[in-house]
Length: 208
Length: 209
Image 1 (cartoon, chains in turn green, blue):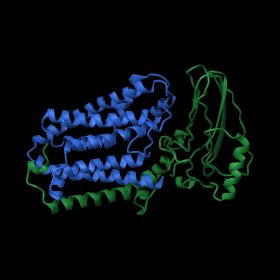
Image 2: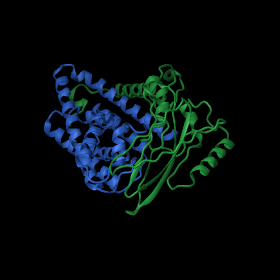
Image 3: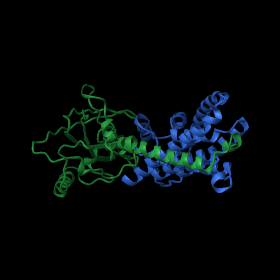
Image 4: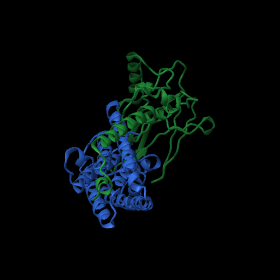
C-alpha cells in the first residue's frame, strides 16, 4: 500500500491542513447552497430557491422509500394552500377519519396533510375481483390541491398489497409523486380473511 | 430520499410485493445498487487509488466485500435496527478517512500509519450496515428471505467487480499521464470534499427527521 507520501514529495502539515479546511469549506458551501435546499428544503441563503431546487424537496417529502416519520406536516411541502393548521382542525379531521375508517392495526392518518372543506364530498365505491398474482390500477383525476381519502377492504386467501401514488397528468407538468401512503397488509392465515386499510393521497401542483 | 441513495420506484414495489425465492431479480438489484451507489464507489475509488498491483486490489476489495457481507446479512436476517442517517454519515466519514489516508495525513499529523487493511475491513462493516438499512425499509417477505439475501449479496459483489473494472481502467489511463502524482493531491482533496458533503447531508437528515 502506497500513499501519496511514498510516491511524491511529502505534503507538509500545513498543506494537509489547508487541503482539509478547503474540503470542509467547499463541502459546507455545496451543502448550504444546493444539497440541503434540494433534499430537505433547508435554504438559509435562498440560493437553492433561486436555482429552483426547492421543488425537489417538496417531492422528497413524500417519497415512501424514506424511513418515513409517522407524521410529516404538510407545511414542509411548502405548497399546501389550506392545510389544517390549528390543533382544533387536526382534532376535527382525526375524529372524522376515525369515524369514516374505524381503527385498523398499522393504519396511520396524517391530519396535517389534509384540510377541512366546506363543499360536499364526492363518494365513490368500487369493487374489483383480482386473479391470483394480478393487480389493478385505479385512477382518480383531481384538481390541484384537492385531496382524496381512500379505504380498501379486501377479502383475500393470501397476502395482498396496495400501493398508492399520485402522478401529475403530463399536460400539467412533469410527473410528480405526491403525498403517498404505502401499506401492506398480509392476511395472516390461509383462511378467507378480510384486510382493510385507509390512507390519503394529495396531488401537489408544480410550483411554476 | 433519506439515504445516500436508495432503492426506489418499481424496484421498491417489487421488493414489497415479492414473496418467495427470486434469486436472479435480487442479484440484479444488488448489482444495480452497487453500480449506482456513489457512496460505495467513492470509497472504492479511494481504496484503489494507490494500488498498482492487481493482487493488492484483490486483497483490499475482498476485505471490503467480507466486511459488508457480514453486516448486510446479519443486519437484514438478524433484524438490526440501525439509524440509516447515522450509518450513511459514517460511510461519508469512510470516504474522508480514505482520502486523508491517501494524502498521508495520519502519518504526517500523528506520526503513525493506521493499518490500511483493518480500516477497509472495518469501514466495510459499516457499508454493509448501510446496505441492510436500505433493504429493511421495505416489508420484505420472510418467505425465501435467506436465499434472496444471499442472491442480493452476490449481486452486490458482481456489481462491485463491474464498477471496479471501470474505475481501474480509468485509473490506468490516468496513471499514464506524467502529471498523475500532481493530480493525486487534488483528487484526494476532492474525494475528501465529497465525503464531507455526504456527512453533512446525512447528519442534517438525522436531525431534521
